[in-house]
Length: 227
Image (tube, rainbow, N blue to C red; front, side):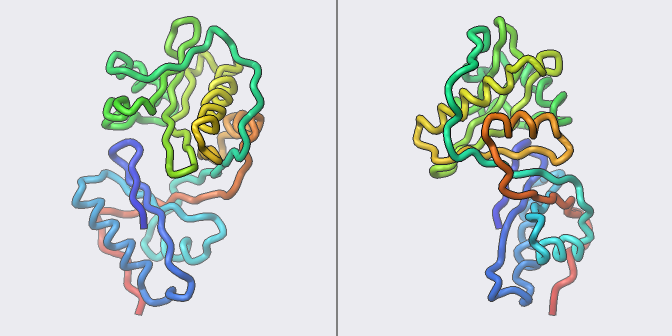
């Protein structure tokens, strides 16, 4: 089971148990230990990610008393998008400490909150600022995991949406990832966000699966163990 936190408050948990070893309480033990780690770290929240087809994962979440919090489509791009459509007024650059306030506002408007340690992600150059006519209008974070690249926290200010800026930026960042050796680019989008889903698929991303996020109770009793 892996633990990951994008915003410093919420930990996302994802794991699996070999089908041949299921029914022995291993999944419950893994989850109990993950919850203990989240508590020890002072996390505010833990979300268990369950692929939609996983009956065992949904069963485990229900036994824990975890309600469904939201669902996301996992998308993947396997070939670089064709060049074209770049607006010279739109510029991408690494984020600096001077951008902290405006990026926090952008991410809060888009996702309801910004990462606690947002500025800590500036050092490696993975957090990018989107400028249009000199104004900061968006942000995203690039991350590599082996040969796969990920795009996270992609936001464009509401007043600048619908102008093709997001599509332009997504194409540029995806092409750069393939140029740097990635064999695929992945991202996630909330199932109800049809506008964003349309943007991503127009660039060439395709849906590979749907994932349900369950809100694990961190400060209540542990889930019942299987016999």
